[in-house]
Image 1 (cartoon, one colour):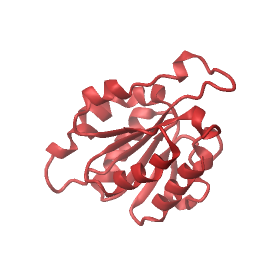
Image 2: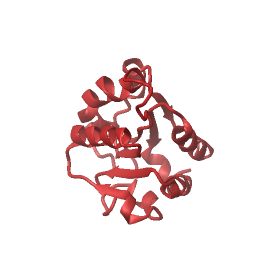
Image 3: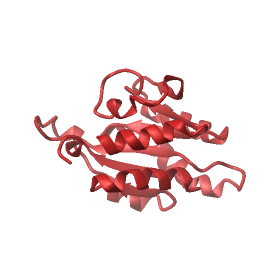
Image 4: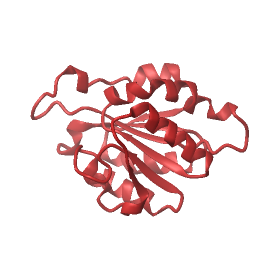
Length: 172
């Protein structure tokens, strides 16, 4: 959690970043606390409309912003699969003038101390790697991988999906 907070704080200081998702401004997920040092004006709270959230992220990228779009669990990001596979992954084919930086932050749901049921603990990393050859997909295994992964995502000209482990927030 400390390294995630450090990475989000660093991203929050960049002039072109915006954070959007559910529970980015108010409590609600384990990701919320990692945004505590991000300025409030950089956070866009959205309702439960995952596909529209990803469409908003693409639109923000087209205006020159770098959206960090939060989906606390892969199972929620599945609802935005159309936008990710058919649009975010194809940004590199849309022309040289399009900003391709869309950072998607998702996670494998925590199973401890209480298992939230199977619809909340999916890991679709490998499936998305097959469907999205133009997106850099990184699964964070260790705390020391966190900051470099987010820095690479920000400095890259490719979209990124960064996968966290919910169980690791309090364990590593």
